[in-house]
Length: 358
Image (cartoon, rainbow, N blue to C red; front, side, top):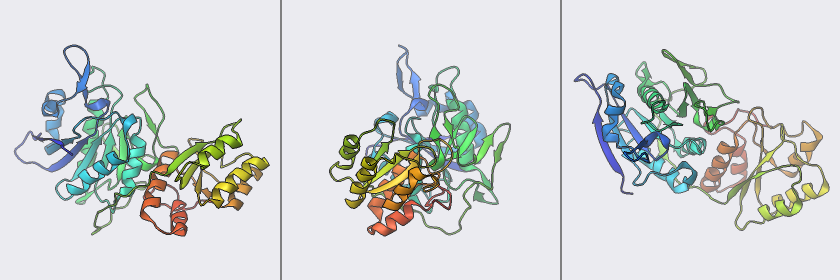
């Protein structure tokens, strides 16, 4: 791809302490109003004019922009491959990475990169904004400034946050645990099943117990194979066997993330059980996740989920739908053995779920 590259020396002093690579994919943060009032991509060469406080960080910043900024609603697998590749290719050159991304699919992208960048020991901070950087009340400046600070923060010479995360509105969340919950408020993201990694106030208060431990001497691996033959099926009162069979009969389908009620419950009518059984017999892997924002799937707790467990439906535990579908795309492409795929779907790969799932 023909990436656009801008290099900035934001240091107010002569000594540059750290370096950060910003990957601009698109999204509201990187937009500005032109003279006619229309939103156009922001010129990152002028970023110091918009955020003069950047000079206080004493860092060297490189911005690599996608050739054409993408609305995050248009994000696809190739974009994930490109994001991960940029980080992998520049991994040894920078202390940390900030990915500017639209909010709508940010949790999906952060989840996927947490799987694709195996052995990551540097911060990859996704952030964005609800208002453009040129807007008077924009949240872009605070989100970007704090994300850059997190990307370069170290303790005892080691990165404090050596994982993929999302920073938004004062909270730093594990990327594969986050969900977008608001479309009009600044607090757009939440992580109901995992505590924040940090909270930014007067100082950045890190929750060290929640952050992935730093591992010495680990080599980063770039795993870029993904399988598109997956889907999410959300149950609802009134769903029919014809609807479910239509989904399960999709040509080439290999995996389904099934959003059930509460702690993994589903209808118990014979037609429903037969639909699931037919899908399982065809070799389709079904992962059971909850429609609730918080809590976890516990198959067999109630009568309404015992049959799913008996048929071989897997429990997603406390994983989010966003992380679940990305994990399924990733494992189906990178593991040849079905038993290994099933085993890894119910076990944490990158902190996306708790250790045990029933």
